[in-house]
Length: 443
Image (cartoon, rainbow, N blue to C red; front, side, top):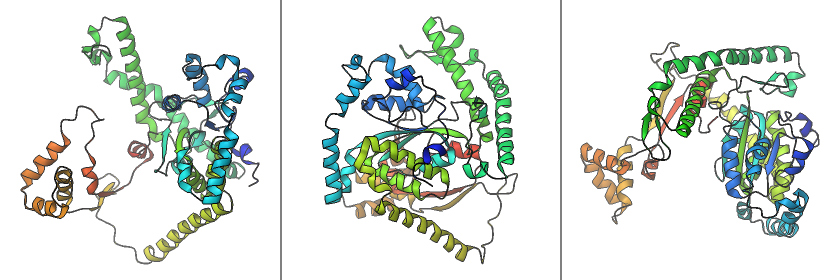
């Protein structure tokens, strides 16, 4: 693919900005009209709040910024009134010197850890959920927020088309008609059932049977007893949101992985560089296109941190990743296809297929966890603690675990890291709706 061709291959952005609006966002975004865009020159708290809101909105990140953040004038900028061009010049002062310093450190000394001192926010909009999962497969030094298919309905059309990815190769092939017909049918079914499911959920959970918490006093009040007008508005809004979320949740099985989504990414320079390398190394065209677009946008923010993602060194790393995947396939073909192992006995499911299989576990899991709990509060050697725990009764071990967990009052009160000392591995056979529920990213 020509290096200048990736913009044309990106799914067009669904955001429409007027010329005046596009001028307003110049200091804060790397472009005003493409579906991959990076944030810049914004306080960290604003970037975090914007991406959090972004994950539960059908709007693009620039439209959200214009509608909900820019009018509040809480960007921590003292002299915004003098115009976007002045602000851009003000913020850009000294960038050239800083970039030269990092370039020398990275090139002359090879200190990759320097790249962890700078970070950036990147918005990848109108991409398939397959591409989203490729982006989200990295973990260290990087965080993600994906548009939720639980809180955002997908029954609308943009420019007369449902929101799903149309791969260039398929749309240029004889399969284009069949592809569009199949996905249109799935979205038609979703759109047809959404109002019915919303009505069904509301009927099963009438609002007059629900209690709401007063945000000011903390009191829990049945809906029929609410007298405060502000609390009444808040309760009605929360109820409508909850009903819609439950309806969307129950219909997510209709949404294919081609469904377009938005992913907000924050990462340090090293993590983002490796993300780009991984995307460049993918077999599918879409991740490769996103890699080129993302490098162009992030290059405006992190400059020298990312130059090696697709240079000679980066291409060598990409080739290594590609060869590793190829070797895995070859090994699986060699060792797993000639003498297949007998299938495990089916579980009691309708299809006769085991949906959840415990593959492996630590037989001494309880001893591992209890030993880790006691180790942090003791000066004894770990080996001695392990030996003593093995001699304990099951009742004592259970009491230690219960005491360690404590009284959890909400989902944010999470047990400590002692539970990381043991592992259970499950093999899950899921449909797309179940996968979205189990996915680590709210999708």
